[in-house]
Amino acid sequence: MRKAGPVLAILFFVAAVLAIGAGNGNAFGNILRNRTRANIPVNLTNLPVAAVVRAQVHHIFFAGRGIAVNPEDKLDFKYIRVITGRVLVPPNNISEASSTSPDLEVTCVNITAGRQRCYTLVRAGIIYLDNERYTLRNIDVDDETATASIYKNQTEVGSIAVMKVSKMNTTIWVGTLTIDGATYYAYILGLPHRLQIKERGEERAGNYKACGPKMPEVNATEIANCKKNGGRIYIGRDENGCPMAPVCLNATCPKVEPVSAQVKVTCRNQGGTLVGGVDENGCPVAQRCVLANGETVG
Amino acid sequence: MNKTIIIISLLLAAFLFGCAQKAEQPPSQKQPEQPRITTPVEEIAANELEKEMPSEEGNFTELDELLVSSV
Image (cartoon, rainbow over all chains, first blue to last red):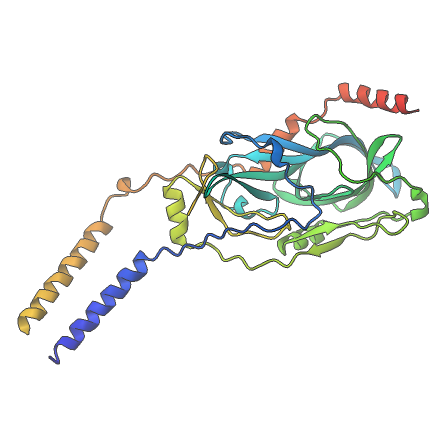
């Protein structure tokens, strides 16, 4: 009987190893929270019914052209062409690195009882300064202000922070643009676009001369740090409608646990893609396994 | 008692042999991997937006009309 002890120990050990191997470690979270942020929400009315098989522009935040002027040297100016908006992308276009991007949003709608279709959208933008092409990331756009980091060849090279001013029935985005260490005052005339979402809220008109010579400025590092912690850049207005210093609004984000290696393998084997991104508050969300048709697994 | 130990040892050996066989399976029998995505989705999205960039001529005309009509 004494000899049976080691044998039983081996059996228990084998059983324990098998149990660990069979565990599924499912960490998917169904995080759907109330909208509390000021970012322009996703337009749910014109989401496609069929699966998204190629990237397509969902809506435009704003598009326009203008001038960026160096306040230290009036002959140092740049011609601006800009467009920013949300783009629907197929889930399988999302790489592992992009799956936790602060510009990635996953919006899910119920299609039948217990089934959801999820749409992966990316906030993106292009800005030309003269003939130089840059992309925009870490984008925050509400009804009155817009901020973003400026990238060139995957490298952060500047930032833009503008506020909306209405003059003569025209929308003008006014603010600062920093590129390669130089700061410019930017004036962008908004141009109408068929995919532009209808503006909410009242239009502001006022005597901005009373606001003083300083315009709100935000640097790229501030934006990146803010985004990393699940925040968004917000430029408030004082009682006279003058822009105040940009602040990072931090939502109280719940901790997101990374998915296990087994979940990654299971998702990949089922032909799905793990997508996380951020919710309406800018908080990182747990990665979900989304199939090519938008349905979730797990 | 000895018989029990022998039977259990045989079962254990068979189990370990099975595990070893499974580990030696050629890679071709595994699930095919998805193609690696090389273009960041942010770039894909930006390229789509660029197609919607207002053209050089048409929209300036629209803007001129807008500005003139509002005077």
